Image (cartoon, rainbow, N blue to C red; front, side, top):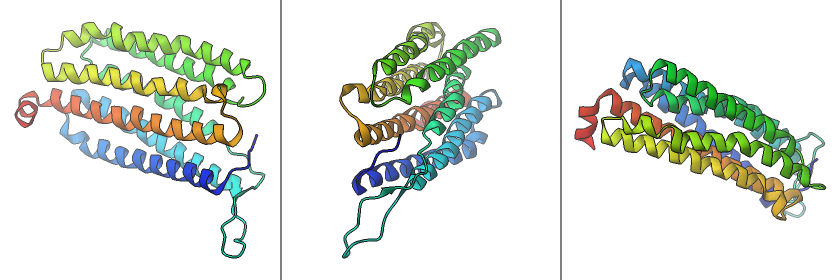
Length: 262
């Protein structure tokens, strides 16, 4: 369902999407250019880190174009810019969920790949976290389509999506602590903890943004708040966590040089 928006609301989402797209593109270039600085053992983690932001950049192009195509500015009246009007082309926010279906499991995998687990543990943890992350996205999408009317349905899907979400949070903050404690490099161990916490904190913004319509926001206000909230969450969870992963791979590739620099 499309809602009329003011010029300020349209521009706010327009600029947020543009900024997020630029962040994803710049991060991708950085991660892949710097891949040669890490040892062969951690290049897979860096490749995945770049893939996450690359996939996100592609989908942000689609979201940005869809938002642009959904509204049109009429001719200015006496030099005054009018509010945009609905073109009839629906805003396809499903691109965001298609992005998350790919990037969220990859985010889990990139963290596991820098943990120093055995091949068996790496495969098991990456699989369980990837499946849980994908299930979380699948369960959240039906409720995302409802921002007005009977919001109890939205609450139901939010609750179901929180089950795999809490499993992921428990694994990151508790289940991986054993592997972090076995890390001999204290600086690396701190950064591994930081990655887990940064992921959890950034992910907590998603369920909060999800409940905006249930907190009284409706119509265009809900659409704008959701778009801005998800843009902030994506930058933190993809670009921010990606740079932490990069620092960890650098530290593990050359621990002595890392210690001298830091």
